[in-house]
Length: 438
Image (cartoon, rainbow, N blue to C red; front, side):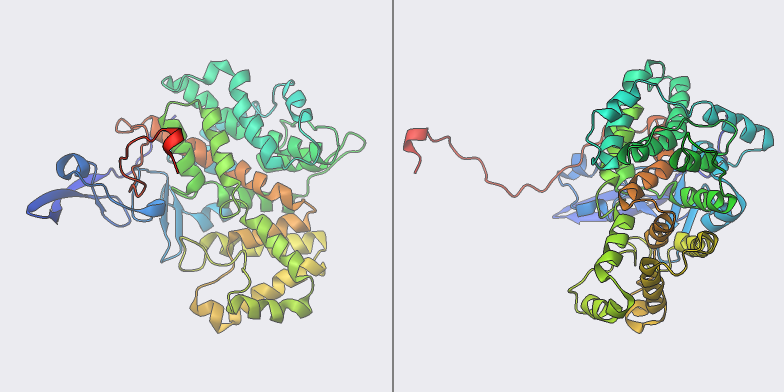
C-alpha cells in the first residue's frame, strides 16, 4: 500500500519557559502541519518532579497523528487534508476507509483491489451464531457487539501478531468487513429473524441494508437513495480525532493487546450516553416531548436548565457541526423517499430544528443541531429501533479506530499509556489491629 504524503511534526527553535521556585525549565514547542502548537512536557517530571493536572485531557495532546484534523472554532473536519463535506458528497465509504488507513485517496486500481479485499471478508465464522444465541433476545445490541468483536481473536489466529505488518493489515481489513455483518446479526437476533448472509455483489452500504432488512421469504431490492444516505452517515462518523472511544482503543493497544480486543474496548467506551449513545438519547427526548404543542414547554425547561436538549451543540465544535450540515440534506432526502415527512415524532424533531436555527437563545450559545440529531431522525424514519443507533455508530467508527490503532502501533515513539494522578487520599498511617479500632 502507498505511503501517505503528509507533513511531519517538527520541533521549533522557540521554547516555553516554566519557572518553579528558583528553577527554570526550557520546554520545546512542537508545531504540526495545522492547529495549535504543542508544548512538549514529556520530560517535565524527570526534570522537575512535577506532573501536570488536566482532567479530561482537554489541553493535552496524547499522541502525534496524521489521520484527522478538527478546528472546532471554525467548524472544520478533515480526513488526511480532505474536507468532510467534499468527501461525503463526492466519495464513497470504501474510498474513505482507504484514505483513513493509507493517508490518500485510491486510484481506480487501488480502489478495486481494496474493495475486493474487504468484500470477500464480510462473512463471519459460522460458530459466531452460537455466541449470539447465548444472549437473551432483549439484550442491548452493544452488549452483544462488545463480546462478538472481542471474540474474533478466538477465530482468527493468523492476524494477532501486532508486530507483523501483514497481520496488522489483515486484521484491519477483517474488522472493517465484518462489523456490518455483526451489527446486522445483532439486529436480526433481537427481532427473532434468521441471520442474513452478506452478498459480494453489493457495495458496502447496500450490503448492510440487505443484511438488515431482507429475509429469505422474498427478494429485497436496495433503495439507492437509502444506500447513498448510509454511505454519507458512515463517512461522517468514520473518525473524529482523539475522542473517548478512539483514546480507549489507543490506550488498550499501547499494552500490546490484540486488535480485536482493542476494538471491543472502543465499542464499550462508545456505548456511553455522553458519546455514541447521543443519537439514541435524541429519540428518547422526542418521545418524552410527545407532541408539537408541548415543545414550547420543553424549550422553556431547557432555558431554565430543567431539561436537557439532546442532539444540539458539541463538545468540540463552537460553530455549526460540519457533519450536521451534510446530513441535514440527506435527512430530508430520506424522509421524502420513505414518505415519513408527516410522522409525528419526526415532526417534533423538525420543529425543534426550526426553533434552534431561529431562536436567539440557541444561536447565542451556538446550540446548533449536531450530527447525532439528524442521524437519529434518519434511523427512526427507516424503522431502525433506537437500541441499534449506537451499533451503527460503532460500525462506521471501526475504520477510524483501526486506522488510529495501526498508526499507534507503527509509531516508534509510542509507549504503554500510563496517566498519572493528583492524589488527595489519606497520607501514610500505621495499621491498627482489629480489636483496637473504634
